[in-house]
Image (cartoon, rainbow, N blue to C red):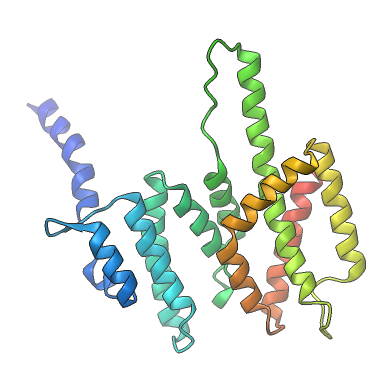
Length: 253
């Protein structure tokens, strides 16, 4: 009997935990068009669908609305930021790589000093992590090489993301009295970055392919960054230093 009760809990408990994930009040935070899309795709038989795609959509849309609302007080923004994290983390835990990528963006966001670069890095890596490659009639050595290749590109993708952030900081330093990075520093970090690519045996064509992925996947966060850098301040400088240190750590290892 005890075993049967435990078995019922194992089967039913996950459903109970995720049955009321979406709060109707949070849906009302969306813009009208986004709300209509969410209800059309994610509401059925008087219940919200708790699919990774629906939860990711709700989480990132709540964040975007808050980010671009300049009338929000800091406490209000932080409250909405936490709601976004809540939905995105559930989505990521359900296997959504897009949610993991969005969490990487959110945790690298410098607004109100909410960034967490360790979590940002972890989620970006999770979003680009590939499942083991299945090779028919392949020996263990071949499969091992495939896995090593994937891991190497994981580091390369993160490094390309960071070097593009550094490039944005450099662009906003050119005609500014206060500089995030000098010309000499920028040349040096690019030289080290190219040496890193060579050590990883990344060809020009492969680099172009990977950078295209990075630029496409990071449109949102790069847009946020450019918006933030319109005004030079200590917080932006601190954020730049963390990006710079993170990049140096990767390419110098």
